[in-house]
Structures are given as structure tokens and as C-alpha cells.
Length: 81
Image (cartoon, rainbow, N blue to C red; front, side):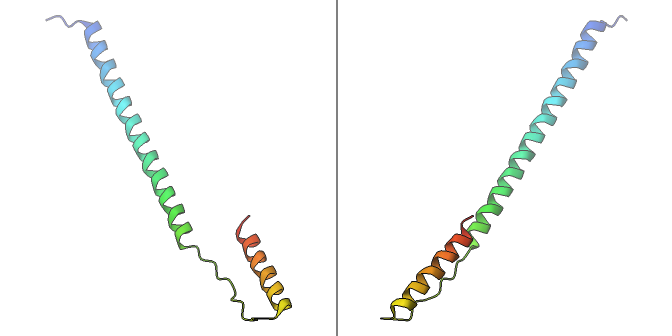
């Protein structure tokens, strides 16, 4: 019985190529899942972010109002890098 070496070599090469493609697809899917998990973590962090601003209680106190505006601006300056 004679086995054609070129056909056997071609079959082995095709199997190797298919295995490599499968590995590549698995890696790409894993990367996509990792990226999606990272995006979900970022979205969750942003959605739970909360800023507590002080309330202005000075009604007609001009200096109290200016202090409140300055405090509010500092809060936003701190939160916005």
C-alpha cells in the first residue's frame, strides 16, 4: 500500500491551520469579553458616582451666597480633572 506523502502533508497543514484559526477566534472572543467587562465596570463606577453639594441657606446673605458659589466651584473643579 502506497501513501501519498504530499496529500498527507497537505492534510496535516490544513489541520494545523484550522487549529490556529480556532485558537485565534478564542483569543479574540476572550479579548472582546474582557473589554466588555471593563466597559461595564467603568459604566458601573460612573453610575454610582455621586456629588453632594452644600445647600445654600443664607437667603439674603450676599457673602454667604458668594461663599456657597466658591465652594460649589471647588467641588466641580475637584471632580473634573
